[in-house]
Structure formats: structure tokens, C-alpha cells
Amino acid sequence: MTSMTRESARALVAPFYAALNTPASKDVAALVSSVASPEWRSYGSANTSKGREDFIKQVMGFGKLIPNLAWDVKDVLVDGNTVVVRSEASGTPAADFMGVPHGGGSFSVVAIDIHTVEDGKLVRADHVEDWATALRQLAARA
Image (cartoon, rainbow, N blue to C red):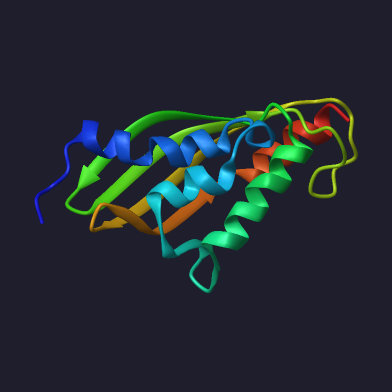
């Protein structure tokens, strides 16, 4: 396999991150399906993963809960068939969020995604989002 350039990797993952930005206003399924294989898995921990369809449902749920959800890609790094994306997620929940009462506050947190690519499609994503910081930010404004 020929190594991807940073530009080609950024273009490959662009529809994935487009799906995360204000997802209530988009066809999340079409965007994610355009770049993620049907067998794609999302890993939030070593023992916990979800498939593409469950991920799409989760993103659509986030879109309803956080209408202005933004996922800003800050950096893209490439190593062979691995694409690492450092991004910032931000938004203002419209209701209680992960146990924090709705207070009208916003959050902004760092996220790291490690995507594995095979045959031009994403087949796996390992990710970490700093939701603990988001909850602290929201609780301080509740």
C-alpha cells in the first residue's frame, strides 16, 4: 500500500468530521457510510466498541441534544494506513447532559481519533474525548 499524504488523509476523513458538525442538519448516515466500511468499528476503550449503524445513531442523538455541536479538526498526522486526528469538540447542550443539569452553558474539549484505513475506507477508529472536562465546564455554569 502506498502511504497517504497528509492532504489525502485529510480529504478521506473530511466527510466523517462533517457528519459530526451540527449533525441534526445533515444526512449523517450518508456521510459516515461514504468513508467507513460496513464492518467499521468505533473503540472508546479496549473492550468497548460499536458498529457503524450504532455510531450513526449516537451521532444523530448528539445532534438533537447539542444542536450547535462543532468538531473542529486541528491537525492530521499520517503513518502508513493510520490517520491520527486531533480535534476540538464544542457545543451548548439543549438539555441535561451526562447527568449535568441543563444550565445553558457550553463546553470545549480535546479529542484524539486514530483511524485505520484499508482499501481507501475507514475500518476502525480508536478515540478519546475529554468528556470529564466538558462535564466540569457545564457544571460550573449550571
